[in-house]
Image (cartoon, rainbow, N blue to C red; front, top):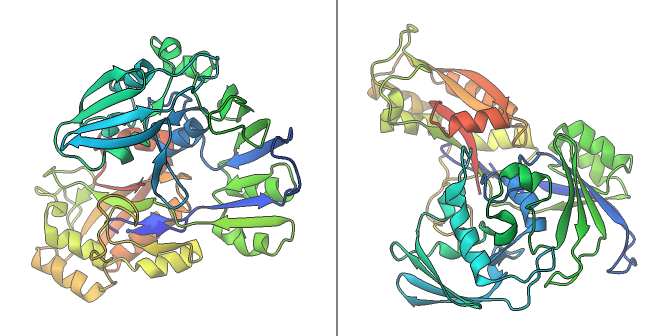
Length: 429
């Protein structure tokens, strides 16, 4: 439905997150001993970088672990633990590893650690978002020598570099028999990243300490504390009262006030995240869909392309962006954002057209409309619950009576990934 600026699509879209920070002394030395305190909008579920491909987990993992390939500020692929890569043939990639990289425990990174880390996501049990999404195209990984790996894909696959940015490398010695709780305690959380884990307290905070032997040079902060503050008012209050140095997920309603404060800097960038509505199209009977008289339907209307098209045309994306996001998003016409492999300049978002939407519903046999339940997360995306209700109002205007059910993110995503919902709000980036 939309893309965030940090963007909002209605069969798909992106929203943009911002970062607000209290102004710091720019003359402070690069090796400053000061602590940096950040307030996060969403809490990571675990420190284990291979358990679940959820953004809060990934955000934390990037401080502790490295990937073979990194992404720069412009969205380009740059060397990480791999200094170079090349295609040997249509299905074989050769990667050269960075020499002299040290783990937090003082041991050296080896090709065996990389091989182990690329295979480990397949062993995750009960993951709500398996990282096998990023490994399923890998047919075989071979260690040629301690600085060279060959990765063979199942078919010619240009997306491998992008997948490798999401696969973090861990110490085989520390993680071989470890479970997520052993990462959370710090026992197995041995990476090569710019910070090492000091403490992870669920529901409260993560404490990190600088890894002085980091191959990219020491970070500018000796310690970093990541505080979990899902309540947006609490985050803003913590910033303005100087309890924290920076917050993520800046509430759109607070942006004018924060922008006017001389002691606060507001940093904004268009993100890769697309907020979209997933319409389940494989089940004939759904407990979440009823006809105009309230009876269960024998065949789900979502299986009819005309209905799906009508649902898209019924959404006024610019109006939702103005009303709920203070312009901090833009309509999206496809799942991926500019800069992501597969993005097409020719795919544009649908324009609002309620008249055509009603005509398509009538042609599909739903002139009297139907009733459905839409599910969404609560406090996972910016104003996610409000956007769900806005979607419901717009669909109701063309005859699709929509009930909204939202729930905490952990419960919601576990059920969504099992395909329990007919219409679900999700994010992709």
